[in-house]
Amino acid sequence: MRKDILILFVLVLSLTVFIGCSGNGEKTYSDKELIEIGQKQWQEDYYGDNREVAPEQAKKLAKRASVYKDMRYIFTAEQQYLAENSCYTSDFSELKIRKPENPYYNIVVQVQDPRRLLITATGNIDEDDNREYIQMNSMGDIEIVRDDVRDWREDDNIMESPDRPIQKARDTEKKILNAYERRMSDVPDE
Image 1: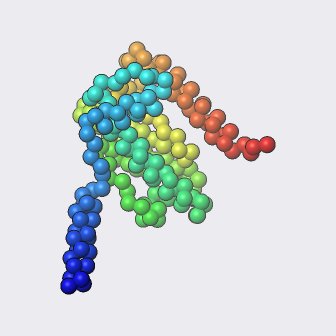
Image 2: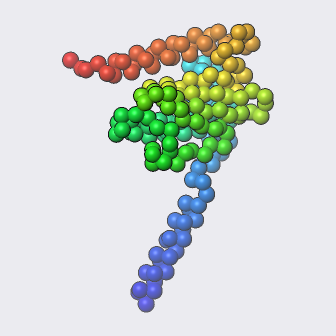
Image 3: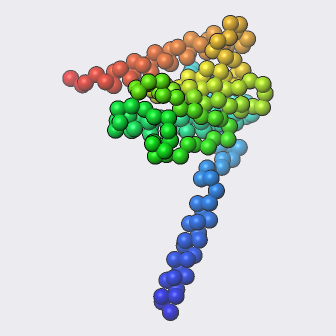
């Protein structure tokens, strides 16, 4: 009798775990959670701009936050592969990870030479004609080359948005601060 109960318990537990793990493994977020994620992403992407974001814009930025997570996941695997093999790879089977399946972005890994890496993500997160283009270099720096939320491109000759020059200055400041922090972390403590 005890053996039957134990088998039944294991069967129920296994079924519960199977049902809980089915699906694509992605957590679904409420609108409120998406807006909070988007607000944080706004402050990270548009360094120094702390204003409240419209809910629809915040939801778009939450989609961008999902691709950042995927890019950092790939970057971490690439760094481990570099440490073990002295080069990068664009083959996910060699990295021993599955390519992230992001519903909003297409992610591509380019090995420019054995020690230079570029991870790019392209997508259209707001259903208009503009596409977003984000890249991460071999240092882990993320740069938005084309912004689908604010509808601008890095190579625009005309600044359509009045706040674009201010944002460009903030982007440059953020790059300088990141590079400084990275270099200072390499300096040994005395």
